[in-house]
Structures are given as structure tokens and as C-alpha cells.
Image 1: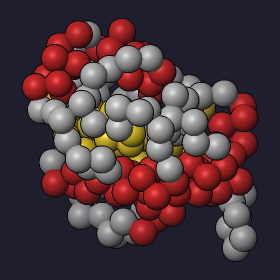
Image 2 (image 1 turned 45 degrees about the vertical axis):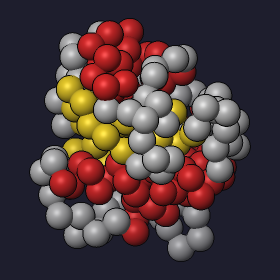
Image 3 (image 1 turned 90 degrees about the horizontal axis):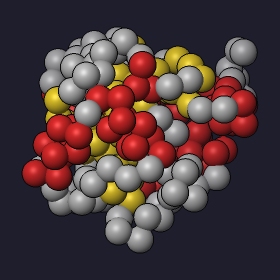
Length: 170
């Protein structure tokens, strides 16, 4: 089944989905941005479990428990290396890895943040096009719902434009 992502503006750590994704570095330590918010809300055990599974190749993903979060899992997508930089291609590959891993885990719902737009420095519009394209291209086995959870009106606009681009209804 092909997926049509939903868009939500807000705090990914509060969403009631089977898994949330973390915009991770390849060593899986959780610093600031989305990773820091997830760690603060869910607990240090998420980072400890993640680090024990790293390092991982750029563009790949691993799952950990979700600590105190409403979700059951955190899927850590390695969207940047130790230089903390990324690209639209790496965001696309990481998004693909996250949705594929959610399917492998038999999950029905997944929330993804705007990968690489914080410390990674990727422009919001590039990120949005890469992520929307990757989700739409995925042939889902178990996933029924993918939520693109962004923070702030500028991110919401960029993702709305990617979702409603040429040939798409608003």
C-alpha cells in the first residue's frame, strides 16, 4: 500500500504513535534539537540503548525502546555524521530506512521529524521534498499512518508546499 503522509505541527515526543523517529548522528548520541527533546521527555535510557547499537552507517536506522514516551519505539535515523552536516539525498535515504524499519517491526504508525534542518543545516524546502517523496514511494506492508511532525510555522509551510505541490490538492 502506498502512503500519503499527514502533517502535524508540534512536539514529536508527545505524539501517540507506535514509533517516533530521531534525527540522529551515526554514533547515535543524543545532543540538541529533536534528539534532545526526545531524551528529555523519554529518559536517558533511550540514549544509552541507542549508543550501544552504534555506530551505524549514514542513511540507516535502528530502533530502541521509547522510555517514558507514549510511543513504543524510537527509530534513530543516521541523517548526519560527526561533522553534523547532511544533504537531501541523505535525508531521503534515512527516511526510507526509517519507514522500512517500522514495517519490519510490524508497526502501524510512525512519526518523522524534519530530518537535518536543525544542526544539519538543510533548507526546509529541500528536506520536505526529500521526505515526502520517500514516504510516498514506500510500498508499505504494515504501516498505515506516517506523520510528518514539524516545529514552527516556517517548517509547516515548507512541508505543506511539498505535500500539495503540482497535481496535489491542498
